[in-house]
Amino acid sequence: MSDAVGVIGAGRMGAAMTARLRSAGVEVVLWNRTPERAARVAAATGARVAQSAREAGAAGPVVLVSLADDAACRAAYEGPDGVAAGAGPGTVVADASTVAPQTAIELAALVRESGGGAMLDTPVSGSVPVVERGELTVMAGGDAGDLDHARPVLDVLAKQIFHVGDHGAGATMKLAVNALVHSLNQALSEALVLAERSGVDRATAYEVFAGSVAGGPFVQYKRAAFERPDEAPVAFRLDLVGKDLDLILDLAARAGAPMPQAVTNRRAVADAVAAGLGDEDMSAIARFLRDRT
Image 1: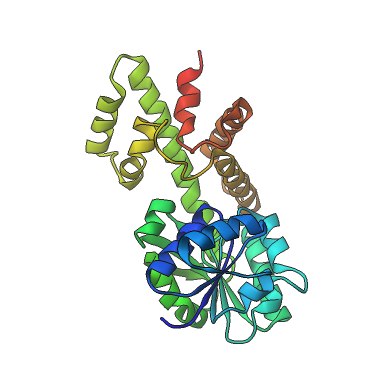
Image 2: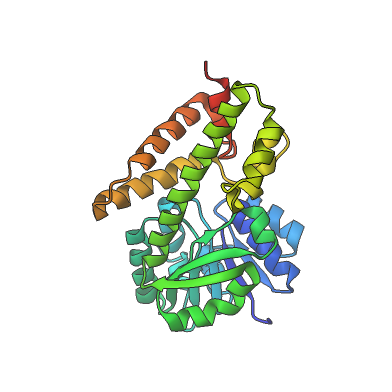
């Protein structure tokens, strides 16, 4: 793959995507709102730092975006120095951020109207280690032809790519997936603490969970985080879980879908964040429950 790829965002996921692309020999032009973070990632990976989101948006036929929330995406896309202005005809912006479906729809229109490019909402399932292995699952919303255009780049990062519908459908599917993931995280935390408080060793309890009918992929890949929370790196911050659940519950209200478990999960996450665990991994829900009397 000889064309450069623009990458917008140098957080955990953006940095991991940059490293994965560079390891595959892809030239990357990276932009981040905080230049120092972009410089650190560039120094570690050999990416080139762009001076603006527009420059990264014009770097090649495919641009990847991975930002924290709707506000960060809008700020990066809009204005004369934004991604939308740089993405000209023939460019496809594949946005992996977790945002509201309506935001994805509006950003796709902005890209089309500003520079003549196209956009896909391509949120992903999987955390940093999954990116590093090139095993993400991509849920794509937008034109099928645009997805074909972006696929050679996405294939470096993903083992599964699903085209789930028009603009906004990828964002919708990501929120549905994350509703399930966050429910699993809460249930696993509660079950582990129940076993511990009842006298079962933590590692033993987790071994049983992993070997049981409940021991699916989430239980397997979060094992280190739950068994050895002081050693495992942060993969998904708890404050971002709260952001996700807000988006999920807003979408549920718009769709008329009852989600009582998500309401309960949101309350538990809010309590844990209020206790100072917002920067911790999502598995810190178990620590929060363990420490409660």
